[in-house]
Image (cartoon, rainbow, N blue to C red):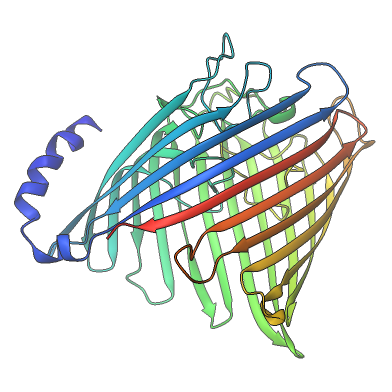
Amino acid sequence: MKPLYALLPLLVATQAAQADFIKDSKGSLQIRNYYFDHDFQGGPGLDEMREWAQGFILKADSGYTEGPIQFGLSFIGMTGFQLDSSPDRTGTGLLSFNPRTREVNDNYSKAGISARFKVSNTELQVGHMTPLLPIMFPVTARLFPPLFRGGMVTSGEIQGLTLRGGYFDRQKYRDSTEDAKLRVSGLNGRFNGTAESSGFMFGGGDYKLLDNLTGSYYYAQLNDIYKQHYVGLTHTTALGPGSLKSEAYYFDSSEDGAAKAGRVDNGNLNLNAAYTLGANTFSLGYMHLSGDTGMPYLASIDPYVMVGGALATEYLNPKERVWQFKHDYDFARHGLPGLKTQIRFIQGRNIHEPVADGNGEEWERDLEVSYTVQSGSLAGLGLRVRHGHYQNNFSRDVEQTRVNVDYTLALW
């Protein structure tokens, strides 16, 4: 990556004279205040992980220069400040800390820059970025998103077809400042989470089969740890007085090369239907895991699964069977635009963790209330409060509360 960064000043100097490079640029500052309380109910180890942090995310994107090969730049900078924490409560993923002493840093900062090259409807981005794909889904579930270092190509030359491919060799984890090697999530000891990979490569795309039907396929490989195939279908249609969105997708995962994180043998089928009627959206989903291990995914991101957004855990244990019911309500119809609520129930059974051996069960209830100011000087200010209650018969129960306030200020 160093040769690229060494060339960036020269590229800017020679290309920035083009009007669109400056005229089409945009910048924003996201201000995020985040409180996270993960309270363990009994058992050995930490009693809770509880922290409060203030974060700032600065984003700047240039426009493109003119010519057959167009050029642009993207920048992201993040700074986080400790408002409340201690060594016996850290580990929420909001703040950086010393893993040996568990002393929390008062503040930490990180940044990334990437160059964008565009020809026709194909773009190459090289540098630091945060892709959003089924095989890597780094949503902002903490104070900051992770940043991946590498390159990615996105092509839309064929109508209805979007192709993507790339390679990443380092990651700035969401609560860290260093470019570290990539790892697999080791939650619940399913895989060796300390095993490091030389890189992550992927390729695939999305194709609009019909106006209301989209198919997807992606292949991913975390070198010497796991390889994964993803195939999915998304369908939307009017149904009676409302609309129905149906999703079906499947992950097939196995170990790769030296299998540094251990054996990987997993299939994961996800089915979900969401019916929207007026202010209500009712969702019913099912997830079926097969094979001898849980499902692997990159550390420090969220897995792209039917129960995505669940607060306490991710329900990816060996041979687990998971049901979910979710209800969303939008109060705009009652003269309160911006106010929304969600309630979700999740149940997982047939868990084959070593301590459960087929008899493991877990369930969760999540409640959420969010409000976004619609007008005035504070338009766009958002408040989101979430609470989760989680129980199981093979580990510790959890009460979790998250509160975050977000405001994005357009700078130009």
